[in-house]
Image (tube, rainbow, N blue to C red):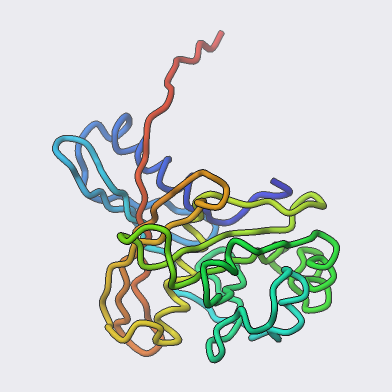
Length: 242
């Protein structure tokens, strides 16, 4: 990482799991973490005696500017008609900003070819690079598509970002999925006001991940953004302080 971020999905769910399992010492159904982005409540959905999916409720979204598809298409290696004809490319944040890019076909998701220099030029031109922003954060790209590899998923997604002079991809991005869910609600991509979605991410990099989204729009400018994932304990140890 180039810098500390105010909010992210993996550390939020992982930290909540450790606190609940090893510090609180009980099966508390919810807890809240006070992060730089704001308080993030985490709820636990159980399967037997152990937590299955953990859901974090992200802060109310902010919607930023809309950007030209033709210019961005050249930066990411896609034809302009690869993007949805009516949905915009828009900056959204629920604590961490992402540029949400609606792609029409799964073949276009596989064809993504984001090169560092063209993307950096685009980011700098539109004030999306860290040195140009009050928050000091470079806006990452989050592509989504209604075509999926799995019949159980409703959306396919990829997260690509400019970091340390190169393009990096993440296999599962909880913060970006909060922005995606907000975007879907804002632009009425699905007509229902309440819906549960399963997003597949990381397939193209052979690191398949599933992210659950629970959505509810309670008022024109108020959203309930819940993003869920599973947590696995992979190691533990002891510190000796002398």
